[in-house]
Image (spheres, one colour):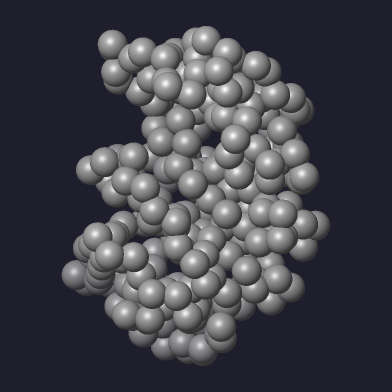
Length: 129
Length: 129
């Protein structure tokens, strides 16, 4: 496990929508915006068992997550890592936690709660600027 | 070449710092913020011959560029594409053009102008939300 770089902790703590890059099964990269939570050791994402990104990560667990400072887009943190494990979230509790973290105090579980999972990611390296 | 999706043209026109994902030579994804210009048919980036991202793309030209709406982070455009060609920019003219596009009216050529190139990218697909 790699330690988070000093001076960039705020980018891990703030509710910023980051960009998660994975490798598609054809080998090409793909990247889409994602909510996240930093738990002090790694990243946690809400996702579902039905979606492409999880299929990508089950085939190749390597990923990159880029968090750009909304107040200064030239300041950013890239977390490179591996999908460590997938935890079931059948009530959507982690989705609700993230929804509240991102500003929706009244967040309710999503319609696809029964398919919800938490993707737990271990960092292997960081890039900063 | 794939056509840009209707209703997302503003994300291609506005000076938003997007996230460019490439495949590292070890096969892992990497993604970092980049200036860009959409020329009506493809994306153009300023870069240098000394940097990792160009080495990545010379080994595997496939990439993904994600542009998130700064006013609504749930709205985004992902451009998947290929590095089509690399044009020399020895005076840094395209860097200056991008600097001005991103709000620096007094942009001057960068110190590494002699190594500057333009990466020209052809879209192969788009993702939107």
